[in-house]
Amino acid sequence: MTDKVESIWLGRMRNPMRMITIASTAATAFMAAWLIAGQTFFATGIGLKQFLSPTDTPSVLVTMIAGSIAMLSASIYFSDRRGMIEQQPEGFFDIVSLFFARLSMIATAVMVLVMFYEVVSRYVFVKPTLWANELSLWIAGFVFLFAGLYAMQQRSHIRIYVVYDLFPRWMQKLADVLAVLLTWAFCFMLIWGGFNESRDKFLRWETFGTAWDPPIPATIKPAILFIALLVAIQALSNLIADWNKMPEHHTPVDDIDEAEIELIRKTVKD
Image (tube, rainbow, N blue to C red; front, side, top):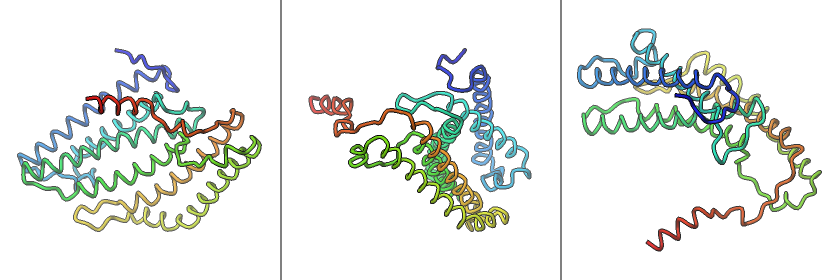
């Protein structure tokens, strides 16, 4: 069975990547179900604590390897398609941003599954976890960062056009250059001020200080600096890609969603 969606950048590798995604996802689901069943019904003692040091437990190590391959391959595969309302990618850094965007979408689904597992475990089997809340926070931190990069690639950050639309094109370009310079200045100051702390947290593998004790500070802090740098690069990439495009003019009509209005009308009639 082949995928009929037009490829953006994978080309011939799209179907092989799809097969890798399906196989690794199935393997991850099987291993996860096996570990959950063992923990729930047979008290095997294998929980999320073992996932913080997977080399000590072969089954956990296999699950983490399969899960990592599944998430990476799925992110690559889904970054090869463009959503109906998404900007057309126009370069390498757009593809990188789309990859992280798809990774954040998958991570959001994983976060929902974690909370679902916690609810079932707590209220059905009366076996609450020590890790569900912290794992959700950990995942949400990365989702927030990746979403910021995706918003920059899609030009979806809040912008005020009241004055911008009055400028001639050369002044609009000047404003765009100024915005990118300010973005890079913020990125530089953020990395300059936070690099040493991020490095120290990562090197000593600083943990959260709880019962499960995940290395949230050791991973989130360096990720903030890394994603901030990618956001600045993406801003520059956007500036180059949009430099020769015709200017957009915005009116209050742009904010009207005709489909939503029609849905409201049908709801009122019913």
